[in-house]
Image (cartoon, rainbow, N blue to C red; front, top):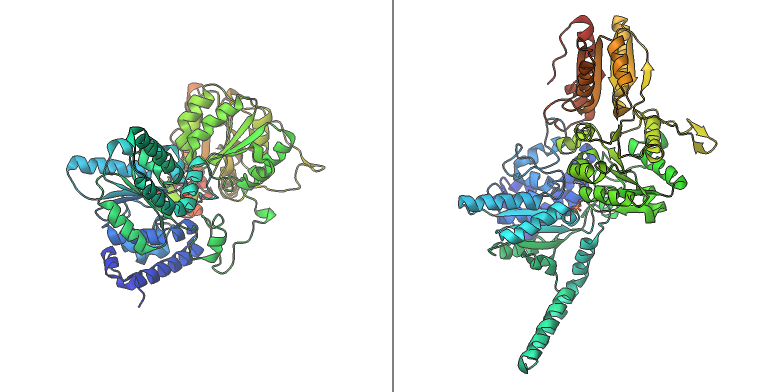
Amino acid sequence: MSVLEKISAPADLRKLSYAEIDRLCSEIRNIMVEVVSKNGGHLASNLGAVELTVALHRVFDLARDRFVFDVGHQCYAHKILSGRLNKIETLRQYGGLSGFPKISESGYDAFGTGHSSTSISAALGYAAGRDLNGENYYVGALIGDASLSSGMAFEALNHLGHMKSRMMIILNDNEMAIAPNVGALSVYLEKIRVGWVYKKVKEDIEALLKMIPIFGSNVAKFVERVKSSLKYLVVPGMLFEELGVKYFGPIDGHNVEQIVTTIENAKDFAGPVIIHAITKKGKGFSLAEASPEKYHSGGLFCVETAPPPAQVENKTYTDIFGDTILDLASRENKIACITAAMCDGTGLSKFAAKYSARFFDVGICEQHALTFAGGLSLTGHIPVVAMYSTFSQRALDQFIHDVALQNLHVILCLDRAGLVGEDGPTHHGAFDISMFKMVPNVIIMAPSDAHELKNAVYNAVYNYRHPVVIRYPKGKAADYNPEKLLNGDFYQYENIEAASYKTVAEGEDLLMISCGTVLDECKKAAAELSEKRRASCEIIDIRFVKPISDKLIKYCGEKFDKIICVEDNCLKGGIGEEISARLYESGYNSKKIKLIGLPDRFVEHGPNSRLKNITGSDSAGILAAALAMLDGEKCRKKE
Ligand SMILES: Cc1ncc(C[n+]2csc(CCOP(=O)(O)OP(=O)(O)O)c2C)c(N)n1
């Protein structure tokens, strides 16, 4: 009988011996590797947090006590232990368990997460509410060392020190973000780790100081000064203590007994405490221990072998962006690239290796990344900030106030725009068009294929002296042909005038305005339409979300009565709404217009093909909308 089988509720963990707990941790790891190899997911972080999670469930009753998992990508052991083992096979599948904590999924999930560095704020909110209500459950946050470096986490620590609420932070310190962690805080934590041995030395010195006879107050003051300067040198956790948070550690984050004992001691403290646990990312699975970055998150893999490197014909939009910026940087030495702890994920690894002086990893600090870029641009550099669309949500004010208001030449490259599949609603890039389109001075491009993306980046660098946003999705790049448009060894970039659009197919009966990589779906739908109804469909690749020219509006208004706008942004504030309003405003107010894009609800997790289908934004949905327009048929019902 496996140890897991002995656990019908988390409280059963308390009945286990520590030898059984060790076996349990291995069993949990095996399940994780098995499931992630089939369903994809965040492996390395989960493997590293098993013992911490088991210890939490052993000490606390997490149905009542409230623990917030930061980012939430390390929640698999928590799900396995809190009544979801029988559904773990469905992890990240449509209708199955989410890859992140979700309050609608289980009462054991205290707070929904996905974006980093929210846990201390959310836990402190819980603690404040608990105290107002006169309740007495325990509250805590489990946060990684990289997530702790973000502004939000610092804001929460600052507030926590002021509130002095009874709550616990468990710092899961594995020295890694997705890649090795960066920044002064990480150097500080490194000092603590290294200084583990200094602990003993410090105790000896203090004992020695106590033995020195004190001759008058000067000597006493001197001793105090020596003591406090020594504290800064060698006492672990001084930073937290100074902020009013009692520090425990560092401890071995893979030793359940040690973690449990420390939690038990720390939780009796009346105010805020932090337990600093040292862990290894990827722990227990040799491939992930050796390459935690590769196994941070990702697709399917064979349990025995590492995933194969990407082939040329499988280049993603991320790869195309990375290659392009590398190429342009060789010609333009003012280009500087900025990432918020996502160097590889955004395709900047080659740039970082070749142009390290012009590369800045600011940590998980999207807000700082944009304002930093603003300053950098005023020194004559051309900052290119690459981040995922979903994380740019956090930096909207910095984009508006620090970049756009001053009309600075900062290029914001948004990867993972549109639906991202199995990571689900916390990670879908559903809102960037709506967010950025409203901002004055900005040029926004939505390239429809690999070559359009290359040209977008080129034009953003050389031709547009404004803030520029370029958005592109996850996945394999359409129309990628490395030979295409080569002039000798050099790629032949094209100058693109802002607001220019491309007519992809000419037609008479209906117009499809396509925004970005949904162009493929539009083409498929148009082909089927012509086959099914002999209807001729014009397709326009709009290229620019902003500006949209009056010429385009006039052309659409004069030539077509039926117009379908397709995008992978949410419909609210999307490009379809913009075109409808502009048509109406220009007097073309009797058009039949159908808007296709993401609905006014959060789209769940699951394979992208399925999500596109249920939101009606695949070729079948576009075709159905076109048929409904042409024939007056009812649109295919959306979920
Ligand atoms: C706001 C935000 N930016 C970027 C990310 C992408 N991201 C997911 S996990 C991660 C690294 C987290 O490192 P750490 O907090 O140390 O946890 P670990 O994975 O090492 O356990 C990053 C950058 C995110 N989830 N949220």
